[in-house]
Length: 302
Ligand SMILES: Cc1ncc(C[n+]2csc(CCOP(=O)(O)OP(=O)(O)O)c2C)c(N)n1
Ligand code: SF4
Ligand SMILES: [Mg+2]
Image 1 (cartoon, rainbow, N blue to C red):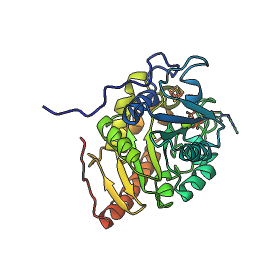
Image 2: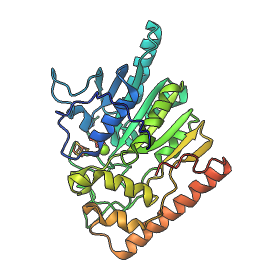
Image 3: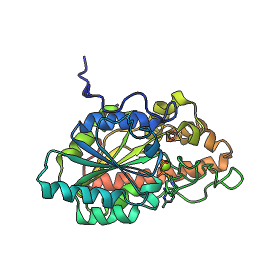
Image 4: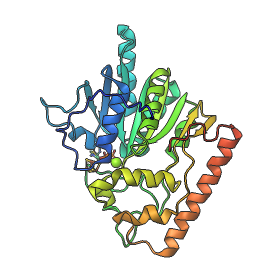
């Protein structure tokens, strides 16, 4: 029988205010299991400013610093510096920011912290739009997607920013992508990040039922489809150079992933083919980088 490695500890209570089926709620639960109680969360404006509940109540069993939208990187850097001055080595500082707070408005603060190699983990909770304010497009929104600012008549016409590569190019010690469909892979990567000194960037894809127009019970399935259709490869990058692919995808057609989501319901065959061609091209690029660093499929978690 397989030995599961998901810690029993629960640091997110069930009475939180995230929507039913929120992918990020399971993501947060798993992340805190990996991080443990000696964690200080830094949360810029996002759904997660709301989800834990209103003060003095909190669904978190760890301290939280709620901060301004653009300051996920700088606030964590400040807390890390303060802990160092106080000689408190047992805490892990973890920013949990949305894609808007990471790909867009928080990019400068994150880049500054990464360039200094400040010692904290940055988790980007990527639901591919500004969900908390009503599903506006961000630079993480994929090509072709509907949002309230990219309606079905004029859906998003630009590709998603490649945040993983942007962070890897800062030459920080550790960059990884995770989903809730591969919980053991996710736990292992966050625990690994915890052991490394410097800036660690974890990219979590978080399906959002209202924003993606999916039923609440489909978030794990969508997370798996994203990986298996090669839309969201699970990987690790060390020092910006050594690439490891963790799951060898079945390469299911991207149409399987798209048709499961209402936000892509307006796309015609030609658009779907264009998206497939882009996914194939990105996959070939990734394989080249991975082969170059000769770390292909070291830890297939399927
Ligand atoms: C400077 C600034 N501009 C706008 C806002 C309003 N605001 C709060 S949360 C949010 C959206 C956050 O989107 P994202 O980072 O993707 O997180 P999500 O809500 O999707 O979890 C916006 C625009 C703000 N708080 N501060
Ligand atoms: S809007 Fe989406 S990301 Fe925000 S709490 Fe609801 S399901 Fe989660
Ligand atoms: Mg978002």
